[in-house]
Length: 169
Image 1 (cartoon, one colour):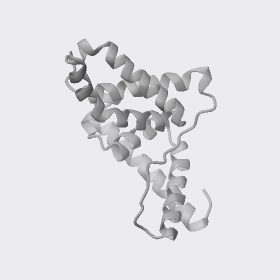
Image 2 (cartoon, helix red, strand yellow):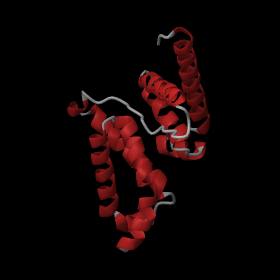
Image 3 (cartoon, helix red, strand yellow):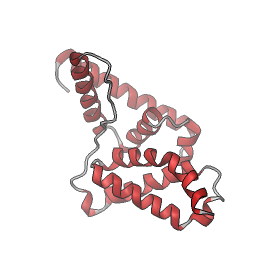
Image 4 (cartoon, helix red, strand yellow):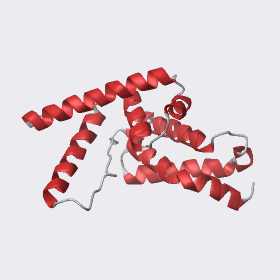
């Protein structure tokens, strides 16, 4: 595979790889390192990349596995999940503050979700993957993906509603 073919095949989804890595690993630096590692692994195996039907799904699976390995390693003790991709420049200052506060609460709530539910929410709601793609990436059936997503959303909704209603988590 030529370098230009590789670049045109992999670069369109490198940001998704980074966002998933950031969701799982927390820090910007860790996510950048993970993204670089994944892209390097893809480059080293560029001759085999054409064999995969969905290179993007394969890359996301590689990212998930790499990040989970990092989290399991001893150096992962200080990592936590952070999500700060949300920005809305067109609303009033008060709405911006409220939105930022809500996103902060959602991030905190997501930290308490089981790992599998966190990943499913990330892949479906943030990265916008189809259920069939998520099922392949996580090696689960679509029904299990839907059930876990529903439970995760319900938990987030309930805790966020309680936070807004009572001001506590």
